[in-house]
Length: 468
Picture 1 (tube, rainbow, N blue to C red):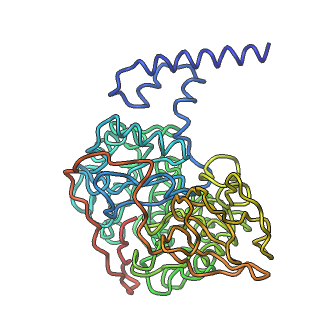
Picture 2: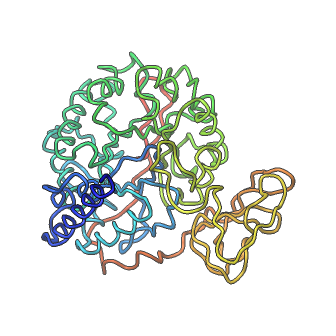
Picture 3: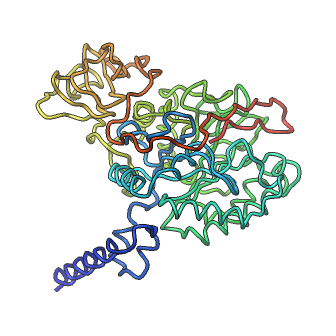
């Protein structure tokens, strides 16, 4: 009977889904789920499940006005944030997304969902000062939530950088609390992602009016899925070692490392570690991917599993996140608690294409498949070639590692033990998207990379971050 009952539920769900497909195409995913049975609703909204371990990349830099990155180029991430939406306007890649017709957006979203990637929008960044500028928090939240729902996105990230309001005026905590509640009223928990992206020093206790982001967390933390904490742009030597990042921040910004923030009441596994993908993506605070991987492994050993964020794609691509995750949550391995592990590869972090064979190379490279000619490899594939470990940074066919095409990054050498190696193609521009092709003839929005903010060494005020 139990099996028959389950089968009946599935049939009911499928019938309900047929009804959903018959609904007007201009309705949102949430609207199409109204009135469904619980099983049908769960199936329809499953793509919006909040991942248990988060790998987040921001996308503000101009790459193309006619395409989003193919999912293979960001394989290993499970959240991709289009930047930016303001209180009453759209900027950069958020504006490009809105320019697309509904059918095109649906097609791209389907590709991202199939790859396990949630597509969200980020609000504000380093430009606007919504509180100091007098923006009404409820009206701003309603505008942003409407953008999310109208454009079938999976949620919103709040990259609030109104430094004057938080550090001196003391108006930020109340504004953010009202804003967050209004967002959640429009974007229900469990159906939409809602994150914040504060700079790390804002968690220093008893430093800021109303206790800064500790005050925000106390007021509305239960409504926030996680924090994409910016551990960069706060001083040349801040958060640049595993100890400084994880357990012992400097006297300039005390108690603002990962485990210190958790000790002050923020749930440990809501603290996503944010870092720039390249030195040029921030003023300071950069860690090379190998070192960051080591830090994440140390954090995991102490019970942390929140994940990492980077500013920004295309520097933060599949090759970057594959290396960053390699020591803690390898791409393709099952994440703790299920869900949110990213896409592609097998349990060892390698992809073994048909017809290839395993060629042990010694040390940690043992068992990794050898590169073979006349074969396609998706981004994130890991192979051995010439005594080294190589990771595909883009889909390629019959492209030899180390060749002129630059399709592979040398990530390690295999002389008895795994040794870090400088990537051979990390700085190369990604190839044109293969899966998401030209999607509009032109985009009316102006897409430009935001100006970099200058870091401040003074203890009285923080350095404004680049954006994410």
